[in-house]
Amino acid sequence: ILNVEQSPQSLHVQEGDSTNFTCSFPSSNFYALHWYRWETAKSPEALFVMTLNGDEKKKGRISATLNTKEGYSYLYIKGSQPEDSATYLCAFFGNEKLTFGTGTRLTIIP
Amino acid sequence: ETGVTQSPTHLIKTRGQQVTLRCSSQSGHNTVSWYQQALGQGPQFIFQYYREEENGRGNFPPRFSGLQFPNYSSELNVNALELDDSALYLCASSLDRTSVYEQYFGPGTRLTVT
Image 1 (cartoon, one colour):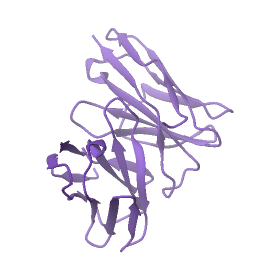
Image 2 (tube, rainbow over the protein chains, first blue to last red):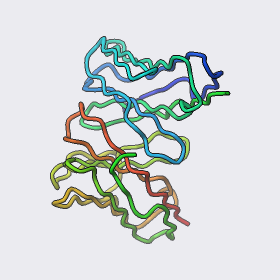
Image 3 (cartoon, rainbow over the protein chains, first blue to last red):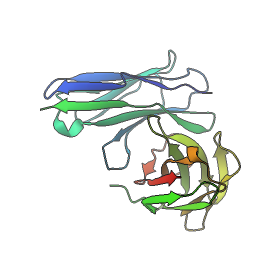
Image 4 (spheres, helix red, strand yellow):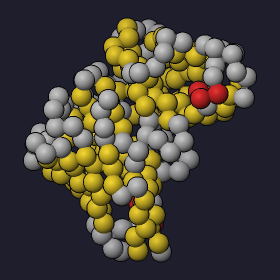
C-alpha cells in the first residue's frame, strides 16, 4: 500500500501572509507528482505536474518544489488571498496509478 | 471549470441495488480515471480506461466495473451496493495515459446507500 501523506491537515492563515505545506511520498517507482486545488462545490483543478528531482514550478503566487530522492514536495503560497481558500491535494504517480494524499485544507482569514 | 461532466449529481440507492454513473470527457482526451472519495479521505483510484480498454485498477472488488465508449465517455457500474459504497465518485479525463498529463476532474456524483 502506497502512503502519500500531507501536512498539516488544516491551516488558517491571515490574508497577506505566506504559507507552505508538505507532501511526502515513496521515493521508489516514482514517475510524477501532481498538485491539485479543490475549492468547495467545484471540481479539483490541476496546479502542477512535476517529474524531475529538483523541479520547481510556479503559477502566479503559487509555487512548488520536488525532491524525489527523499520523497517530498512543498507547495508555497505567497501573499495569501481569500480566493486561495481550498483543499490542496498532492498525488503520487507510481505503479501505474495516481495515489492521493488526504489534502491540506487552507482557510484564509480576511 | 473543466469540460468534464458527470451525471447524476446526487443519487440515493438501497443496499443490494446496482448503480451506473456516467462521465463525459474533455474534448480530445482518450483516458478516463474513476476515483472514490469517502469522507475525510483523499480520492481513491478505482480504475482507468485508455482507448476503451481497462488500463489499471485499484484495490476495489469486481463488483466495481466500467466501460469506455468510442467517444471516450465512460460509465462506472457498481453491483450489490453496500453501505460503505456511500461516497463522492469523481471521474477525470486526461490527454493520454502517462503520468505527465494532468487530470481534468468532473464535479462528482454523490452516492448515498441506505
